[in-house]
Image 1: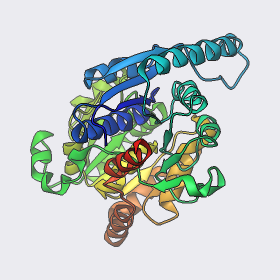
Image 2 (image 1 turned 180 degrees about the horizontal axis):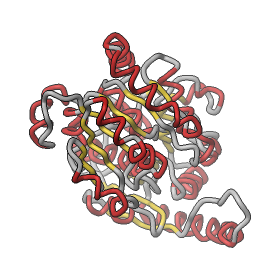
Image 3 (image 1 turned 45 degrees about the horizontal axis):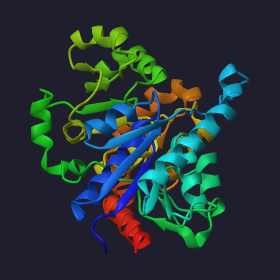
Length: 363
């Protein structure tokens, strides 16, 4: 295969789209150090900062999603789409990619549409158990669709689907060897069980309110908390860091050690988080966000719960959370079966598998 390959990768808006895109780029660079990789993102979104930090060039399109209610932004959408299609055309004409990869997010729509029009092979990495409208449309023309869940033949042509899983941080693959290091890093009391609470990088209001309301309940259970409240809520909740057995973090830079040190996990159900938690293999309670497109977090969580790999508490049923948690804390057998079942769903070689598929398209 030629060494000087050109690859466009488009995805962003959230860490769940950006992180897999960077993982794929890193694996391509390991195999083809001479490869030219160009990212295409949405202006003003977090990829414009995160991708250069990872060492890659990125071009921005003027694109955003359609709001669910009638707003001025929606009236701008046709202009943004035309502008983005034209800019994507200019980028692709100049860069001449051998293949275009989309990991989801607003910018991947125009980028892959133009690539398809110009006869460039395209690959979609669909992270969720229920694809968004952009990927459903792009899937009609894509050569390959790498998925993380079963039963996506409802949305995509069966002969294009490859079940690879979602790329995850490689430092999670050996967290069972880091338990002591994790407990030391977070200065935990080794005689107590630890609950890790995750609301995503920005945070989750409902999860934070739930923790605040139940601080006495956690104390009665004799557990300690690593509480990642998120960037948007840190000022509001940092005061609880003074409590015994409660740590409040805006962000966790060492996720591997946080996972290693914890005994139980309470988390949102974004695609990346779910894939990571399958590898981590700890008893997990998902609280899916109902405020995302096509309610995909609920569907992600349900796909794990249906295989007895996790418990799910919906946002409109949060008053049941203390009972669900207390029952789990007391039931050793349930803890073990949840751990085993979620771990069986892990696909740790996803990044390799996806890049194998990209190689086939280039050849």
